[in-house]
Amino acid sequence: MFESAIEKALQFTRPLHTISRTYGGLVMPGTATFFFVNDSGVAITCKHVLNLIPAADTINQTFAKFKAERDKLPRDGKYKHNIRGLEMKYKYLPETTVQLKNNFLNCFDKIDQIVCHAHPTLDLAILEFKGFNKIFYNSHASFIKDSSTIKQGKYLCRIGYPFPEFNNFRHNPDIDDIEWTNTGNPNSPSFPIDGIVTRFVADPNLNAVTGIEMSTAGLRGQSGGPLFDTEGKVYGMQFATNHLHLGFDMKDKEIIQDGKKTKVSNYPFLHTGICVHVDKIKEFLTEHKISYTEAG
Image 1 (cartoon, rainbow, N blue to C red):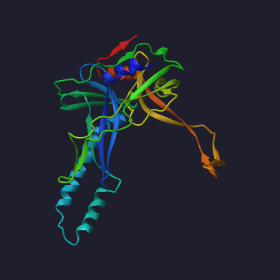
Image 2: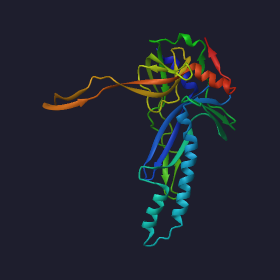
Image 3: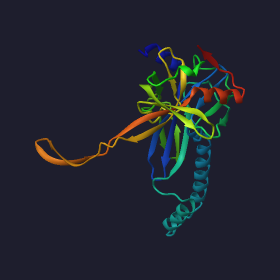
Image 4: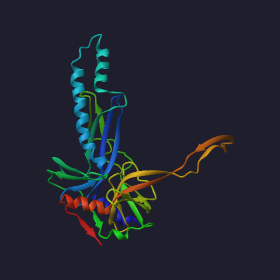
């Protein structure tokens, strides 16, 4: 049902790949999603995804200062003691993220600058890419013109990149840095998930509907991805998942498993995806004089 719509959405939807490294040495891949709203290099995503850009600069600069101080320590009997003092100064624990790098995949030949606009209250952000010569995305979103057609039971789809499979990165021990490589798998698969509109999210301070709740969860990594119908028209943007306690709790219920009696407990939840409403996206784009397309 969504076959052609997914093909349309993937023309303007892209993954953000991240690699992070903990102080304990664990290097982890991560993904998020963004999509383009015009042919001028402007995309939207979640504000919490946007925050990865300045966060990377801050985290990496702090670790560079740490390394500079660490490398000046004399390798004597007090070295381990001094290292612990340096770790306390920078508040580094084994699980602390000390390096973070981002890669906006398959968008442009180069990026010199990203001008960012964060919405003051919603989890919504605009990314204006600058300095490119070639564009590698093939289309842009068309937003539904009349939002009154969005009603309970409307069947819609979201798409993003929730399961990172890329492995084109490594830790370079010679310079103690994480880096992208030209080897390995540079891609992660897109993943769609369908559902129906269940409820709407309203902001009492704005006296307006700001979000759309879906009957299925938005997956980690799908944040910033489009919500669209069977024709590919965009209705919103995935940004969060609510966890609704169903109340069907079981405690110490006796069951038979593998031929043995055992007791289990279960506290089930329904996970519903929350999307920024299309009207709020269009309002924010208009406020920043960003061109976009509407479809009937």
